[in-house]
View 1: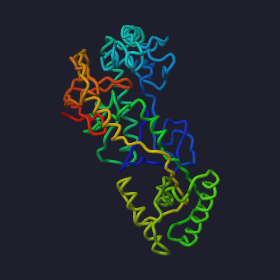
View 2 (view 1 turned 135 degrees about the vertical axis):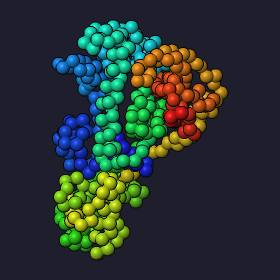
View 3 (view 1 turned 90 degrees about the horizontal axis):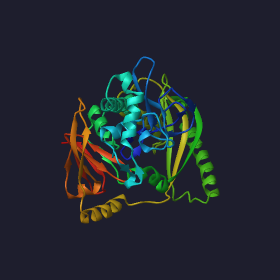
View 4 (view 1 turned 90 degrees about the vertical axis):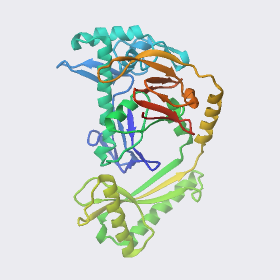
Length: 394
C-alpha cells in the first residue's frame, strides 16, 4: 500500500527522500533528491498473514506477489493473504474477478486459514479472516497517519481507495471517500498524461539574515542558464514551460527544510519577504512558528514543468454516465461480515453504473472489472459528474 497527501491539487513533496525503508522517516538510506512525500508499507492484497513466536497475528511485510499470488487465485499460493481474508468475509467475489476472467476459489482460501491460522488463534476461518482484515487496517492506518498527523497536519482530508477505505475513514473520522473512474488503471493513466519535469539544485548555505540578496539572485540566474541549455538540447521550448524558483530554508536548530517560492522582491525586501513566507509555511505544515530563531538557507532550486498532454476527466466521466443511464443495472446479494462483532449481513452486489440511477446505502458491494468497493452499513455511495464514487456516512 502506498499513501501520499495531496493539498490544493498538489502532491506534497520533500526536498530529500529515503529509499529502502518503506517511506517512514529515518528508516532508509538518505537520497538528496526531491521526491513525493510517499509512504509505502507491506499491507496490500498479497500480504501474507502469519503467527509470530508469541502467538500474535501478523500481516506482511512478506507478500505472495503476483505469482503465485493469494491462495484463492488457484495459482499455487499456499499462505493465507489479505485478499483471501476479503474473499472469506464476502467483500470480494467468491466466484470470479476482473469480469469473470480470474476464477476465485473461496473454499481453498478457507482451507488455508484452517491450516495456517485457525489452530493457533483458536478461531473459525471467518473470525480469523476478520482478524486479518483488522490487522491489515491497523497497518494501513500507520501509513495514513505518517502522511497526515505525523507530518504536522491536523485537518480533515478526503480519502481515496476501495475495499478498506471506508473502515479506515471511520477510524480517522474522515467523512468522505473518493474512488475514481477506472481505479485499477489510474496510476498508469497518470503516467501517460503527466507533465515532464526537471529539477535543478545548487547548494547555497548560510544564515538568511547574513546573505547578500544580490548573490542569491545571481545563483538563481546561473542555475537558470544551465536549465535553458539543457532544455534546448532536448528540443523543449523553455518559454512554453512553467518555471518555479524555490529556496530551501529551515530553522537553525532543525534538520528538516521547507522549499519556499522565491518572492518577486529585491534587496532587504527579498530577505524580509522570504522570512515571512517561511514562518507562514512552517506554521501551516507543522502548526507552529518560531519567529525569534535564525533561519538557515540550504539550497537554491529551479523546478520546470513542460506540458506533455491532457485528458478531460469530466468529459470521460460524462461519457461513462451517459452509457450507464441507458444500461439495466444488475443486482445480486451475498452474505458479508461487517461491524465490531463481524456479524453476517446480506449485502447488495451492484456496479458503479448502478449509482447513475440513485444513491446506495450500505451494506453493499460495488464490483468492477478492476476493483471492488465496500460500502459498510451506515455509509452511502453516490456518483459525481466525473463518475467518481463518493462514500460518506449515511
